[in-house]
Structure formats: C-alpha cells, structure tokens
Amino acid sequence: MKRQIAITVALLALLALVLWLVPDASAAPSGGNDVGHNIGSLLRHYAGQIYGGIIAIVGLIFLLNRRYTDLALFFLAAVLVAWLVFSPDQVADAARGIGDQILP
Image 1 (cartoon, rainbow, N blue to C red):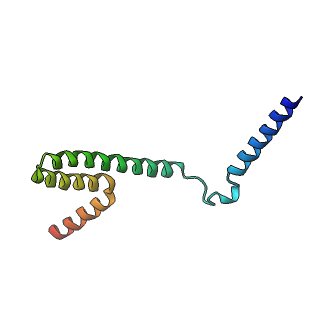
Image 2: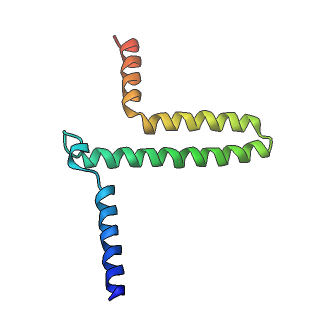
Image 3: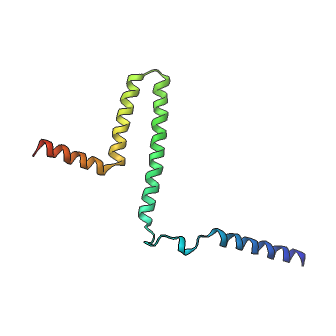
C-alpha cells in the first residue's frame, strides 16, 4: 500500500516536472517552424567549429615543426577556403564587382 502511494507520488512529481519544463505555445515563434532553416544553420555552425578545430590542429603541427612560411601559407589557404565555403553570397558579390570593373 505504501509502495503504491510512493510510486503514485513519484509519477505525479515527474509529470509536474515535465509539464513545467515543456514551453507553452505562447513562447513559440508566431511565424511557425522553419525546420530546414534551423537544421541548416545548426549544421553550418557545427561544420564551422569542426573546420576551425582541424585548422588549429594542423596549424599547431606546423608551428611545432617551426615551419612558419608553410604555416602562413596554410592559414591563408584555410581562410580562402572558409570564405568560399561558408559565405558563397559574399563570393558571388565580390566576383560580380570584379567582373563589373574588368568588363564594363
């Protein structure tokens, strides 16, 4: 009997905790969910962190081997690749600007 009461109280406490932690509908954005945009931005964020970590590790290897010229060239190439991959709209704008200057 006491065990059933304890289990019931524990389940009610768990239910109260779940209801307290679940956000209500008024906290949700009014525009609806944009799942594709959210997943895309999340994956872009993770890819940026992984890319930065790999660049740091490889840069550390160059630094420990005292290959400073190779380190500078590697960082320049890494920044260029990151700019091309993570900001394609800026690359397109820059290419249009260069094209407008060369071919009026």
